[in-house]
Length: 290
Image (cartoon, rainbow, N blue to C red; front, side):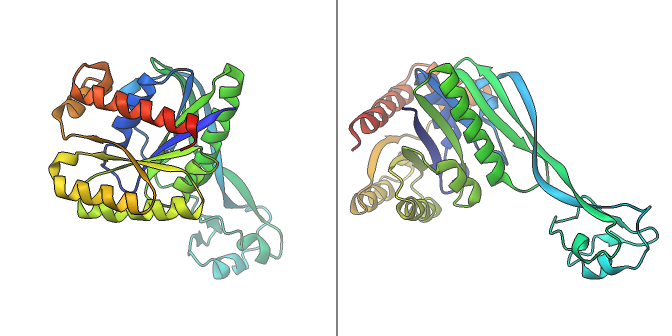
């Protein structure tokens, strides 16, 4: 059985990717998947060597065949987004939302929907093992579909490689891309911080996890910025039956490691020791189911 751990956060900037990169280095027999497709940055730490690059088609745009078009203007009148211009009638592909209303109203069947490349997904080799990752083109949507694609490719590759664990760097927030990232996961690890926004967004993520009956654990990063707020976060998690598996201090070592293209655990220190303890605790939870 292949187990899936997804590291997530209710907001950006909590240190989620730094934590995930450290877990990737600590893990054994693990495939990596970067599902933060809107702003992927795991590659900055793990410096992958690309093995495969595949286009991702996540949407369609309308296209008018000027040879068939009789310039009746029905399409432009029906377009709610005002992306069709006359003389001759053409569609602005950058502005088209792909709603497919114009082909329905065209009396001469001059309009068709064509697939549009929205990004790429990759399979790469890193010093922590193989990684599946992706990048959405600027301004394009359907990040949830691309996350699902990354998850499916990662699962298939893990089976081929005989690996028993997938480690996912999930997107921030609680939108469709996060839901795609955590669907079917064995454990979601939420990285939060002792701030007002951190507490608010942690509760949103925990609400989502509860809705989908997703096992969850919490890491409090930069806990020493406010010991009182960290204690309140811990108490709040305890009331909800959620384990806090560890606390990480605010430390410049995280930034210095990123500047060097390394994870924190590749350099000895108290931060690396704390991350090792947290990773071991996560493995215990997966094995015991508690």
